[in-house]
Amino acid sequence: MTMMENKIGRPSKAQERSYEILQAAFSVVVREGLEGITFAKVAEASDMQRTLVHHYFSSRSELLNAFIEHYISKMGTEIIHRFSGKPLSERIVMMFTPEVYRTKDDLVVWFELVAQSARNPFIQQKLHTLWTQNWLPDFESQVTQEYPKATLEAVSSATYAIVCLFEAYWAFSIQGVTDQKRQNQMEQTVLMILNGLS
Image (tube, rainbow, N blue to C red; front, side, top):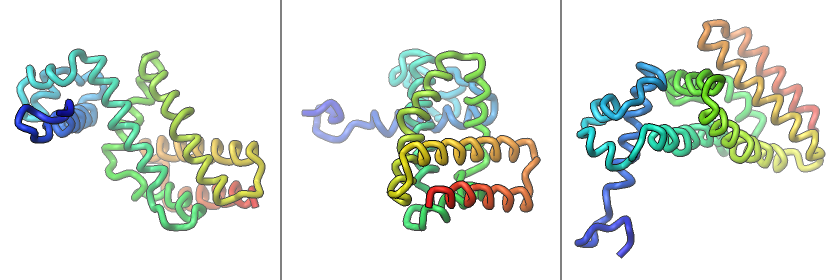
């Protein structure tokens, strides 16, 4: 019998419940920021008893860790692979369109984490790890496949520049600075960077 099965052989609800709790934590962060993540508020948002939330996550830091490692990690990976099946240059241009984020709430939660990372070494380390060990290498791999003649250094530089533009563009969008003209300018800039790899 595996750990994910109960005594009568049915799959455990642990994974499903954990994900429901992390979704509830997401909704709390949207409304109140990371400071709002408490067992009471997450329990209320998930329609579960506080003791049940505590059963799955023994501490607030464990809940926050799972939220970043699983929910946010998945969200970032989905963005990097969004629009799969299209040519990479087209996919990258589409990363500067509203469709890249599932909802505006994703954007709000992401920048809440970024802001908190300036004051919270734990969050900074988690985001640093996601970028340096997951998202940037994944993106570099995709660019390398599309531009096999480019040097690894050129791919790394181009990837990093595009990601920096992506982060800045969406930070500006939260502030209401972006518009169609600026979106077009960003697309042209990204295509110039990619053309440099040909």
